Image 1: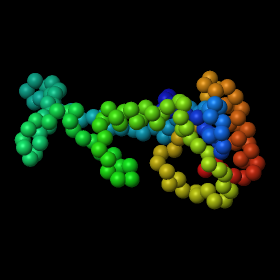
Image 2: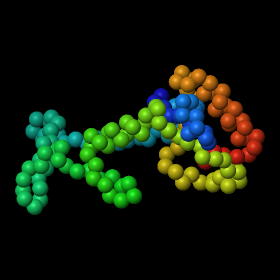
Image 3: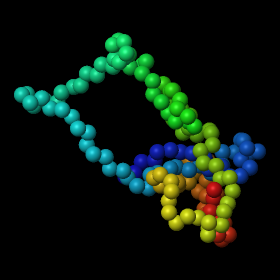
Image 4: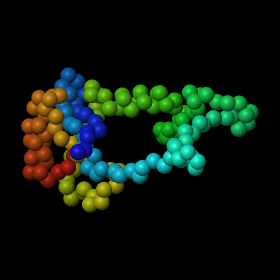
Amino acid sequence: KRGKFATVPLLLPGWKEREGHPGIMLDLYGAVQVRKKPEKYAVHQENNKMTIKNTIRTNTETGEVVAPEDVHHFADFCGRVSIHPADLGKMKKASNSHNEAGLVVHGFRPMKLLSTTNLMSRSSIGIANDSRVSGSEKALYNLKQSMMKKGVFAV
């Protein structure tokens, strides 16, 4: 069974003028389940028990021990930016917020312009969630039918 990884609103053009209305609420599921190899762990040769690694971080220039909370992580936001792991968690939580824009439809393009190759990363499936916003299922169905009738896709 695949679990959902996010619940986000699908906001149509002009959504900023309708701030009080969250749009169509979608549950996002991964279309492909990614298999991961089991993690490797070290086993002691004599007693055949798993060994526990104890990592000590040191400054290569001074030889001082560095606390884990002082280690900097970097993210690429149009340039390399230092970010603390706790702040990274806050960013992920904020980006998956139920009150902010998740997916925004900016407009529509003809289907003939849709590339046959998927240049994005892993595909996701969005299913309407009527429990968060009533009418989402009907609105998503009508949007899909209208797009198919006109021969367009959402951008």
